[in-house]
Image 1 (cartoon, one colour):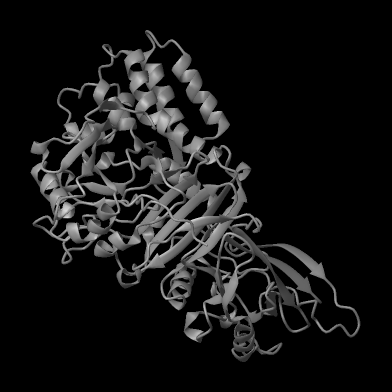
Image 2: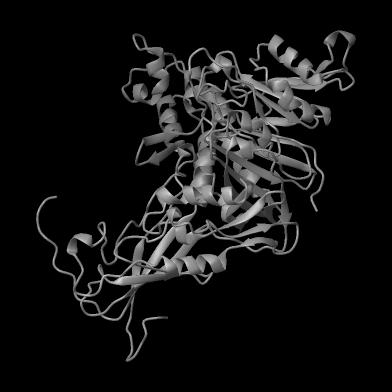
Length: 601
């Protein structure tokens, strides 16, 4: 049974955020560009590639939501509108926190290689080249008066790069959605004409409105994830609002924390048919399999990618060594050592990325830009885009820098948002990561998540044995192999080629289940028998020994190699970032066949 809850929706500018109904208010620019908003003009491209949200169900009857905002466009056209119960607390998080959380919880796929029997030796290789910080909040709460037009400002303030306001609408007036539109337009929020129809059902349920926009001098490079805490029973994603600006097969990734493992209670639970994932190179195929699986459930199902107790997430966003390093910086006296302080701050906030070079935490350049003067003769945009470049070139004058003031700003803007996000994860007993893809036509039901104490942990790391069936006439590179799955499927192939894909017509779901707050779930669709039969029917022809064409020896397959650290993205949803897949072919173990052995385990 689904518990009734306030419909709170926190949705990023290009996504619906669970538990808090976020409605991005972005007007259509005159030129075609991605606006990332929920009320974008339908004729322009929209960066609605993926939603990433963290939810925690708290013992005090509240839900905390950390929502990443995706937005491309002009700063003065950015805006959010979120129907919320009561007056939520509002803070900022860090994109770095999301990147670390996703990297640590991404699905991985690994093949261990076992050799049966004896193969011919490989020929020798040819030689040659080839914060929850309150911010500056001004309390504007008060009773409605006859002159307010039915709109009361309950709270307002500035946190990080955002101005925000909480509005209460007079439910006795004829059309409160139009009232909200008029107020927002009159206060310089650019709202499209479709907004009232989308927010009206939430307002009629007695919700207030949280409106967010960038501060006057902020630019889109300062956009941060937001942290909201509000009264609610369980998390919900107001996905119906997102349909206005959603790309086809938009990715939605959610981490749900609570006392037990989380489940989707009004969407289906999808168990992927992992034989359709290319285990030699999972990156290009994983997201396509999820898309197909979601479509098989009518576009309303989630894949559980990980479910673990919270100790697996300890220090994940903020490692202990980094916490200790930062605290020592904040506690030290940096008088007369300004240059050393800046170097320490740079090192403490630096993430090393072998593809794009050093990446700094959110807010670093914002803070330094407020405390360092632009050097004479240096372009302001160049300086703020690479402050540390000029520091190391000794071009910047730091003689007037006040370390204490700088550190206070640094603590609030850069450091505390990372601490707050880690503490949110630390506050629960379980964290469950779920993922799906939806197109606009499928966004007719807002997903709701609840908790099931009867379910066990679920690892994001998937490992199978590839058993090479050696015999004279084959080298290990040429010999046929088999991979056995827990569901009883046996995939057979040869060389470095995975024989199955979506074009085979094999179902993408092994099973589709309906989950509740107890038990193992009701099986709605069971494809396991059909899949097993189709795999056998589509088994590839194996080239007999001594007839192997060396040119067909696989794409770089080696006896104990392959891609041991394959990085991937959800195809078609690049902003979701690297779902770290591992297709390593290693840990070779030799298993000799005895006389008359069949080659099976």
